[in-house]
Amino acid sequence: MRSDAGTVAQYLRELPDDRRKAIKTLRTVIRDNLNPGFKEGMQYGMIGYFVPHSVYPDGYHCDPNEPLPFAGLGSQKNHMALYLFCVYGNPTLESWFTKSWKATGKKLDMGKSCVRFKSIEDVPLDVAGALIARVTSDDFIARYEQATAGVRKPARKKATKKAGKTKSKKAASKKAAGRRIR
Image 1: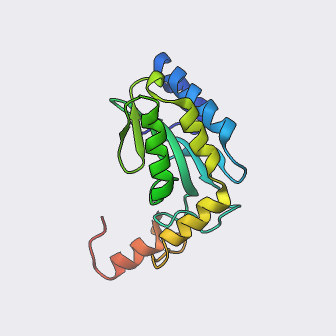
Image 2 (image 1 turned 120 degrees about the horizontal axis):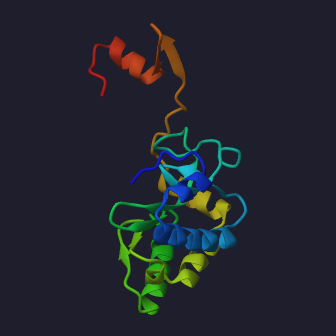
Image 3 (image 1 turned 180 degrees about the vertical axis):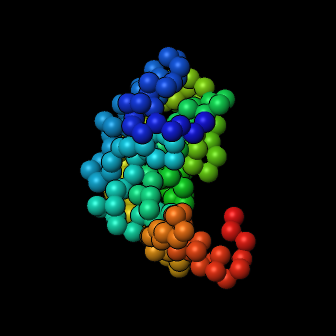
């Protein structure tokens, strides 16, 4: 479930006690192993770890106003999740991670980059920490740029004000062209 919390502390306060304990435990592991060049904050309605614009001004190609996401930690309706953007598109790192996790005997419930878990006991914290520690911000940026080479990175959106309403330039130009805006 997406949170409207503005800070990590506020996000944690909103969680039920059992989930707060699990998320705080995994958060500590991530923070203890996070390399320089990454920052923690709220991103996409959960705790995010990202390359800030001060390090990587282009931001995330899907939304350049967002810093480049590296990992995320959230409480969803039916599970908690560790989002590992650092393994997405990196077959070597993904293979190491999945083999290391499975070697612990714990079940791995993973999509492309989302590891779902019900309790903190389901997570091999040493493997999660080792994964985070393996990736530097420079390596992550290089891998990201390699993976997105040829993908058009739109310029950051700038708002224009028209008739008392704020709209992006893209939305304003679509409306001017007579197309339906969604």
